[in-house]
Image (cartoon, rainbow, N blue to C red; front, side, top):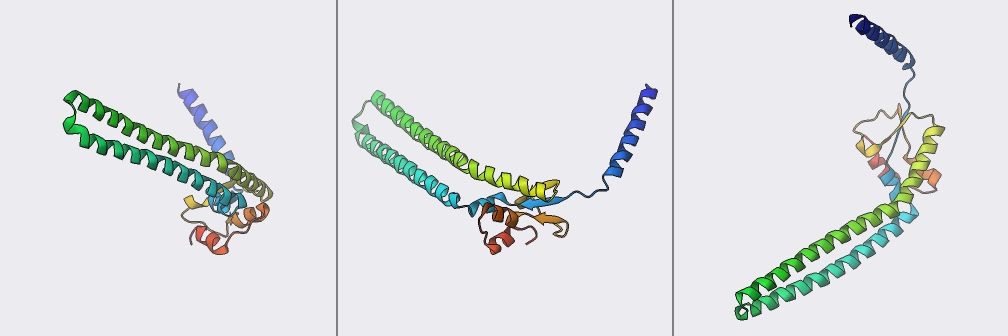
Length: 185
């Protein structure tokens, strides 16, 4: 038992020293803000317009359902004194079911719009990711981080890729927006 423990400890120490010797090479790091870059892509505005149209259509449909529901509630309130207790309970149940259907419809529309946005944005995200990969390879970067998650970056040791990515995609990023999105600004 002890013999195996010492053997494992010796192997671990040898492996650790080998790793320490090879880790003298510094890790090359870059960072980018894909969301910022996507906002400047020509297709982005079209996608946002499509989503806004779908949201407006969904809101109109839900508004019509809500107005119909309110009319039914008002009609029920006027007729309630004339209804038998059984019929009152039946109508209240119908109204409760209709309200639940409206809520389900609203949730389904929200889910549909979220899926639509995901589907429409996926090609843009793929294009940006492809360019990030190409730039990272060209600059021999070991790691590329998403800049909004960073709190501090030593700019002399870490490369901001936003402008390189934008150039490669053929888009212009407002320097003030890029500077505001950079870490430490």
